[in-house]
Length: 322
Image (cartoon, rainbow, N blue to C red; front, side, top):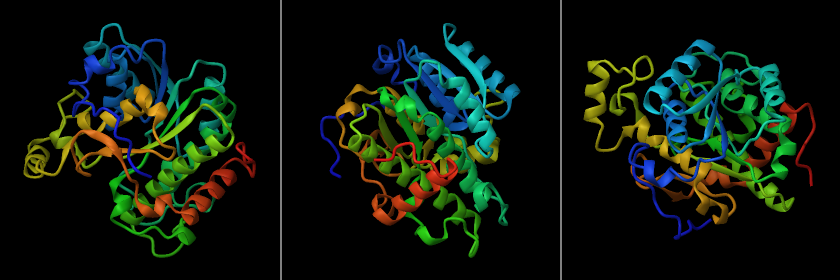
């Protein structure tokens, strides 16, 4: 897939894109999972500034309410609300889908997940370990439950990672029943998200549906380089120092979140090639641009395995069957 040349690159952080996004969010409803901190919070803030109705789908209601309070302090007219969602539980995905089924929905950002995987393997959904369960399987069930909504111009945004370029994924061992390592668990879960999102976008085209699925990665985004927000991002001196020492190849979460907002709102992406992927221009940092995902996530083997897991997550039903 060759990146399109007509996609105008946004500014490097959510604050500098205020004017660019201002007309794009009006009348749109966007769900952000895991929105109470990190990239999810800053994406929600950017979307609220753009005038979108933002649903913060989070596991912890009190943290979500605090996040909404911080958004309203910065955007007094913000339209934000909380919905319960724990991406490690099937029944939670089903519950969120039931709430969303008859609501306006323009974009779904699958951001919630585990960054620091357990040191030893913890059993999760469908015999997979916890990180795959949280980062991919729960969202897979949510997509399946909302499949009918893809007959509308909905955007699904799957949050990948640059780690997919750094560690090979074994499609025959996605459950990590052998050779478990926390970093491998994280990288493979993100590879599954990317592969599924790319495969979904192609399937939507085959079905001639107006929805899009866009994969993104936020680069190397650190809390130590992120703007301070009380009880949302409050890195101590050590984290700030580490961030500064890595600033030549790292960025803040308020910068990494630009890709999430762009994927939800940018009108130019309607005409982007199928299987499009957004990431920082310089891989780890820089302005958001159309890029090429890791080769494995574009490959048939991993996409097929991720799709099989999607079908399994939906009790053997393929809601996008040809």
